Length: 68
Image 1: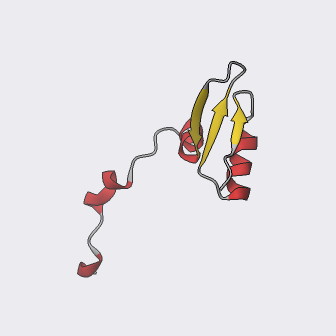
Image 2: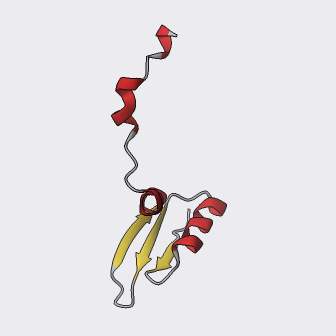
């Protein structure tokens, strides 16, 4: 699998669209000084919608399948 890299000047919308089209979940972010970072689909979603709780946070609200 080849790495998906973006610059820190890339728009969130273009990164989001690439994630969707290429079924990606992460991208490497670089800036003009070659510093490296990582962005994920969850990072983008949380920037838009706010904090997204982990599935474990809701586990108390669900019954195990064997009880249904």
